[in-house]
Image 1 (cartoon, rainbow, N blue to C red):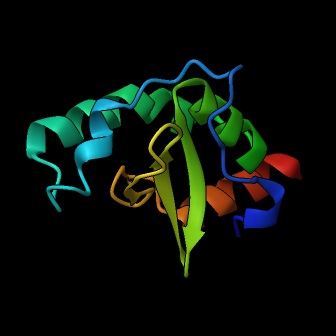
Image 2: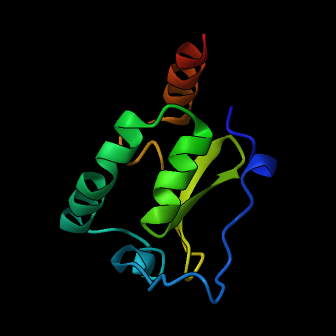
Length: 108
């Protein structure tokens, strides 16, 4: 399973040039609209589909202004700038258990 201590939450620094993502407002309105959800899935699908490990996925997402954080049993996507909890990996079509299984298979 995704272990939070390996991936510290990204914090804004002078070296980071992240702007708040369009998806960071989703938790303010409590629900992402269908079009925004579809755009987010398309925007991140290659990263989730081709990542070879949690670390690889984390790096790919950070390059796009996001990071992962566990919340109980679920892995959530957060905005690096505002630290807003946007959605779960499951919502994006990539349940954390499925990712874990795939990453373990790649290792062996």
